[in-house]
Amino acid sequence: MKLKRFFCLIALTIFIWSCKKDDNPVDAVIVPPRTLADVAVEDEKEIQAFLQTHFYNYEEFETPPTDFDFNIRIDTISGDNAGKTPLANQVQSETLDVLIDNEEGEIQHTLYYLIVNEGSEESPTIGDNVFVQYEGLLLDSTSFDASSTPVVFNLSRVVSGFGNGTTKLKGGTGPIENGDGTVRYDGHGIGMIIMPSGLGYFNSPPQGSNIPQYSPLIFKVDLLSFEEDTDLDKDGIPSILEDLDMDGNLNNDNTDQDSERIFFPNYNDADDDGDGTSTLEEISDDDGNIITPYPDTDGDGTPDYLDSDS
Ligand SMILES: [Ca+2]
Ligand SMILES: [Ca+2]
Ligand SMILES: [Ca+2]
Ligand SMILES: [Ca+2]
Image (cartoon, rainbow, N blue to C red; front, top):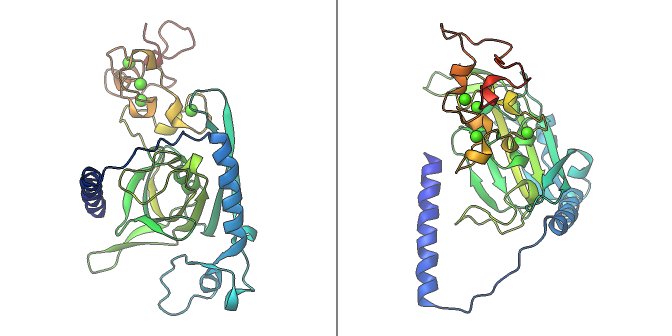
């Protein structure tokens, strides 16, 4: 529901902006696009400065006050808070490669994540649907988006920093009925992800949002639960197994890309080889049971569902 309202708001904002433009014509200023390499260096510096100068309410999580809401709060290390431990001492990090637009190589990016409560169950994979609450912030603490109620996302269909960061958390036990029609998850993962813009929206933030281009992003995430071995396109193959080159990125595996007008990567394509027979049919027997290993009729090492000539 909240998302719907958000999109209405976006539509309204775009409308207002376009009216303004017509009323007050200004000379167009063409800003040349910036390179991934330059922005990555700049973002890393900004993030480092942020991590050194900010802390979160770790003391409240260590000794929760009565009625504590278990929300992460960030503040500046200064004045009364001068002695607080900086985020820089508490975050973990992972290096991720981001492909340059014209495919002339990759640029390394560092994803930072803070695990406040790891969670009591298992971790999702990058192919799974997750049930989360979140808030998105800029480094200056401006909030740009938040869920008012938990929402479902597939971790490969959100910005890669959010997707990869959320796999570091674990879900909680539940759903547990609260007795008033609501449910809760106990012991769920609570964390925060800090990412350079190359793992976020880079030069194309959502239209109408208040995210500037090339902005590092922060997401506070509560991972309530997830759907284990999610099969997004319902083709019988769990999404994580459609990462053919096993590089942790499901969006760069597309067997039939040469014949597709719109790019549908395998995890989001029910006919992976584009031969007109669904993947599910190519891996099922007459009774509808999945055959493993997947059939390879011509014995060329490529299973039928990825082999458009068999
Ligand atoms: Ca891949
Ligand atoms: Ca495809
Ligand atoms: Ca597929
Ligand atoms: Ca097929």
